[in-house]
Length: 244
Ligand SMILES: Nc1ncnc2c1ncn2[C@@H]1O[C@H](COP(=O)(O)OP(=O)(O)OP(=O)(O)O)[C@@H](O)[C@H]1O
Ligand SMILES: [Mg+2]
Image (cartoon, rainbow, N blue to C red):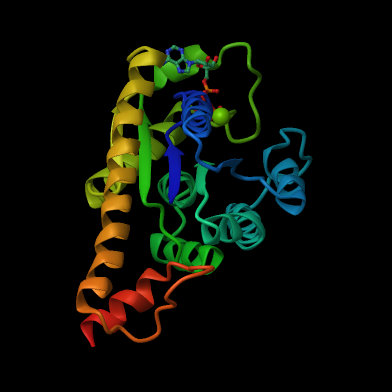
């Protein structure tokens, strides 16, 4: 399962991502926490290029988009896909929605390009669950006081108001995946809300797994399923074999 955290700078993504990862690990799940841009050696180099505020020449918006995409492509292939393949839970601090919100709505790059580039970078991987932490811009700025601004964070208020619009549009477009969380609540209350939603999703996942495993047993004769041993739950091919 892939869980992502989204929202403007200072909304509380990293705090909540860590609390969620810690909780899932306490419960015995293998849980990988990664951040974007970053999460692999190459992606961390790209992060430095992207967020270093001391660039001499301004970074072109198109170059910025493609660097974020390069970082993501490496992260997905090198880290996220292998973790998902062994059934680990992956938590990602920012993912594709950030690109739509920042490079699309913020910078004004065409959304159609961004969607294609996101698709290429992720190989079509879409989060199962996304928490969009919503806070007023002023509160986010107050929370970030003293943390030092990186290159993106030093953008003006107008840029961020466009980013917020982008996030809200995404929330409306994908209501099943994206949960808009009131980020003005206390850290504990937000964590509680997120935990409830994660556990609900995990429950659905387990119910789904049981359904898929029960049906072939009831049907008794589904070809291609190993009887015992090192069982790889390939749900897609199981589902396919049930419907054909
Ligand atoms: N619900 C909350 N109430 C009060 N303070 C909070 C809350 N959530 C986070 N903070 C504080 O706000 C600051 C920013 O939080 P955090 O680093 O988690 O945000 P972020 O979204 O990851 O920011 P960035 O996008 O810059 O990485 C931290 O000092 C954190 O302790
Ligand atoms: Mg953070």
